[in-house]
Length: 217
Image (spheres, rainbow, N blue to C red):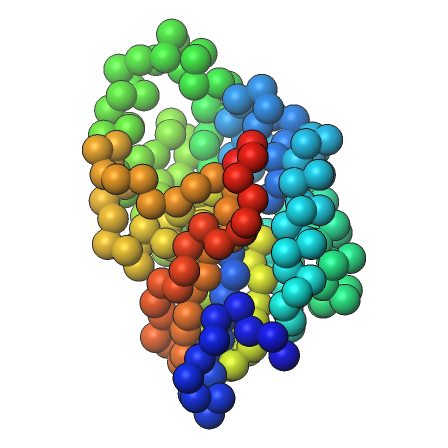
């Protein structure tokens, strides 16, 4: 089995979790907030996912665990072709953060319609919560137990987790001790692959932004 991270002792192999967001969608191209709503992958998004697959086929993926929303299902269908049809577990706890009344809107529209509310939410950090939506704390509360369960269910394996920006960011920012404030130095590149390393209930950050792809991320 080719490992995404080389470990010094085979007897101490940890579970490697590879986190990636779904491919770019039509609404992403338009700058629209999706949240729990859905939009199909765009042509450039499908091309992007094929590029990810060409990278991942060089490694053994033992299991795929994914959000059950349509844009993730479409992403996984492509990736499976490169991962020897690795089995998939669909998990609704890995769905995107609910953006409530802001779903379907663009940030340009929000800046015109609700500039004060938008500015306040951006400054709220972990308490960011769109009207009638879900906070980042709530996203972490539902997604982190899924990750711990994966460590226990797949010890020493390599697991690909395909989810959404809100989930991926919440998990990694939690482990990195970030506050989700705009003045923080940028940690993650868009549409990249990030690694977590875990054993039992212990979880830590691995290498981030590891895909050798730089265009249109």
